Length: 326
Image 1 (cartoon, rainbow, N blue to C red):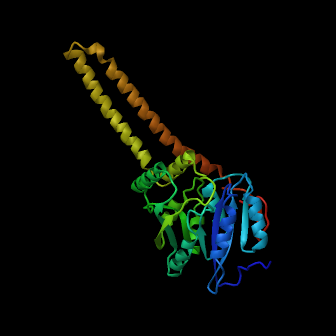
Image 2: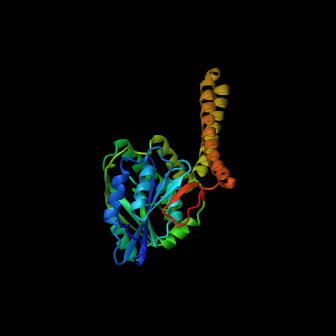
Image 3: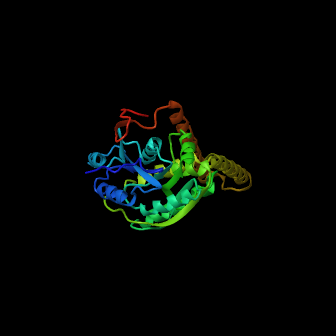
């Protein structure tokens, strides 16, 4: 079987696909990508599939696909580093004039990428997909996602598009700007908003997963949300100051009440209830504030350790076959 070539086109588009335990869907994903993104006179494609430490047959399947299509490259992590790091690794390895990020589960339709390319050719640096519908997701997930994006946009120091995930196209200069941001607790969609340049959106309907299950349980969703909030806003720290002021005011009022009860009423012995409420309230707020401060200190600790974002154990389809790349 003759391998398709990615070198015949004038412009190159890199499609980055992070994968984690996707053996049930990866065959359909590769087939659909290959069918849609054929090289033509103006644009060629390369595909970088990033295996994020999968424990199933995802990597073996990707190796087989890479043998039949020279446009397919595979990065295999030494362990699971997380979705945002897998996206980062794919972007780092991309050689395209533009880079597209799309998940392997086919919830984000690959056909929309063709519309993104047209916008890019029209002069935009970033073209992101905005979800008008999200099929196959629970009411709880829909409601929490809606609340999160609006809350994040409310407190963020940089406007972040609502109802938008990592599904997007970025020009080479946008990619270069993104690569200059080395932070470890990454929230890619927020980082892309921060870099600026000329950005636009494309509305689309998000489909159900083709197969398999979501790789974002509640625990990971909470961690992801906290990354977005803490990475793009210092308002939680300012909120802790507000809590402190409220506590101080409440305590002052409680002291006045205690003096009044002691000297002007006969019920001053019963004031232990007020005292207990005040102590518990102030103690609770102090713990919340310490937790918020601890989160920021933890981020500083992670940054100063200087560890690599990821380790690659295999590079398949690349000219450079280095092991353990950073």
